[in-house]
Image 1 (cartoon, rainbow, N blue to C red):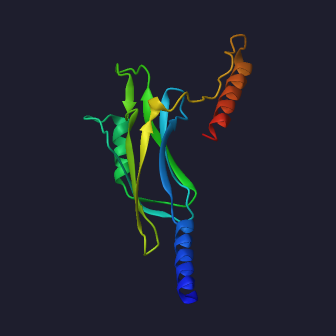
Image 2 (cartoon, one colour):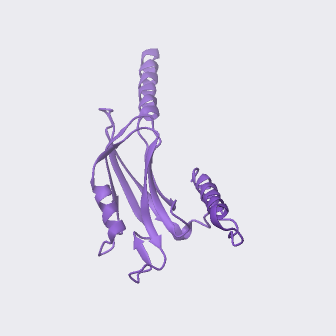
Image 3 (cartoon, one colour):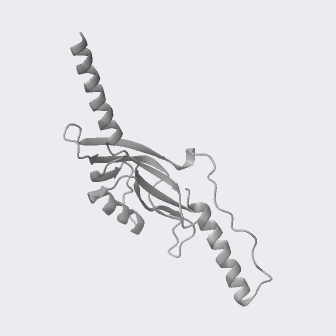
Length: 176
């Protein structure tokens, strides 16, 4: 009985070790660093080892791809290694009034992103997971404040003020 219990305990310890040291990759679409009308995709490996042969896919590709969507599709189809505790962040979607008359560029406000990768563990080398894109169902997103417009400032004082505004906005983005 004790030999069986020791075998079971050793097997559980082995599985626990694999789970603690494996890569864990997730994908999320979140407010963009380029401004309030942009969305970024961040792919993160929160695990303790490298995610190898990482590939992504999206289930809602548009029929025709613009520049942003083409760049994302190329990125998704290019296998890469994502080190532990590292991430990749790229533009996902841009909204606004563009010079060519379009109102949006990039990929959709909903869909599902699939991540497919391997690890260095010979016993469980392949992982496949999916993450929903739910821009319209994610509540109200916080955005860094711009502050007041420096109407009364001129020359270097105005430049310094605008620089300060930009820096403050960027600092608020660091944790997103």
